[in-house]
Image 1 (cartoon, one colour):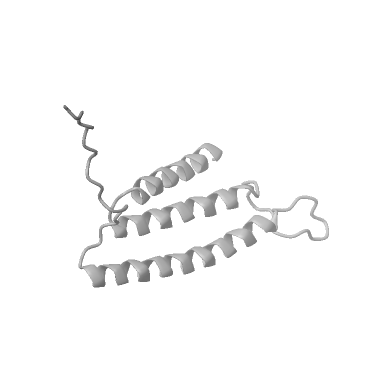
Image 2 (cartoon, rainbow, N blue to C red):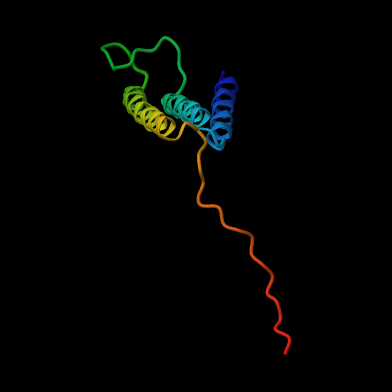
Length: 120
């Protein structure tokens, strides 16, 4: 179970990083979403993967599931939803203003010319 869970986190992270490094805005948005899903699964996995245990300590129960990672995942879901909404609005504004969704890294600089020696 742990190997499958770790593999899923690894695949989501790899796919998310690949898409974030693309030069189009839509794949970047999808990549950020995949990375946030991977972080959510990682946070959920920190609470140990156990089955049929209560999330809080009750009378007569000696072991329980840690509720802190579950609360962190819920908080991370809300934050990632808000972050995704902001990035989508920024990408939409950029697309509507330039009619292109490419991500510009910076101004293009011409290649350097080799230094020429002055002949006197």
